[in-house]
Length: 182
Length: 231
Image (cartoon, rainbow over all chains, first blue to last red; front, side, top):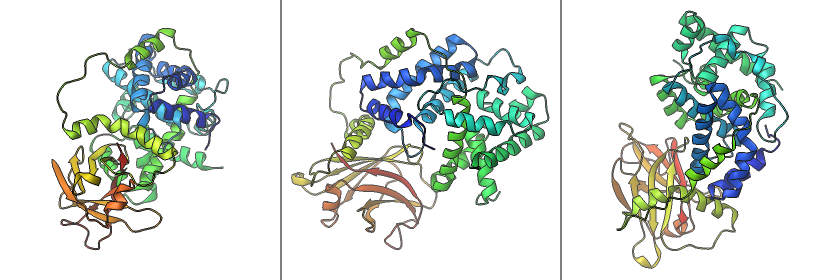
């Protein structure tokens, strides 16, 4: 799927790999708000999310040459760096509030279209998540936003491990079916 | 577990991308993914789709201080350069990111006729991890040779790694020899292969039986790839 603006982000990333600071700044301006929102969503703390965004962008500067346009959309690649860093922070200092219900779709929205930051993916994923039974959807969102493994999910949701594993597996397979429909 | 069953593959790829596949199962999956492009592609598809979670989060403008701190961190350090000669692979490792840049330039500029002089290649696996560093010297410096340094490749029991030059345009790969499992090695370059390398050939590493491919062509999966570029 080609996203509007994805080509421009890919170009900015390529120029960043060539140590073009103005391209890097343009890349930051174009993606930082979305990525900061994402880090905030995972970390739930502004100060930590700021550190996370900072680390992630330093990493993007150093690793821009590793970006492979044939393997991922630029935003996907950058979001993965932010997510990995955010989950590192989360492991180092777990969130104090553990309210399972907060990962619902209410906060899941696509605001004003920003070129290249995956609005189409957000719409498609949201549409398909809504077709899942609520517990399946919640388990998947929890593991995505909190990096929880099966056992941690089971604890967080106060459900048996086997049940949670089934939710995740069935949820993902149903998601796949839905996402693959044209 | 039947790994080649499409449903199993789909389930593992999904849980890999989501992050719920952990421990030995995750490492096993990564190994298989390195050998089977269709697995990697499935994970890439999932990663793209799950990135919809990130894209679906409302944007929040970060405070201006974040950008200025990032700028400070990426400014080149002012510390003096270390004195003394670096061993060539240390310089090469430092140049690995530079290599990507040079490659990017090489891809957009018109192909030069024949480049003579040291050329390097960084052989990466499909996850972008470097397995070997390669340096090819030719031209007036004497006998053409390839020096190979193991950077991150881990040996596979009862298997050898073989290096190939890929002439492109549908021509068959040409064996350059077996790669060392550790340390450094020198491979001799025949006069037949030399022009190919001097043009900046693509290189690939396949997994072969001990002693190398019995057929003269790659028989096992290609785990690492790279391209020779002039320094």
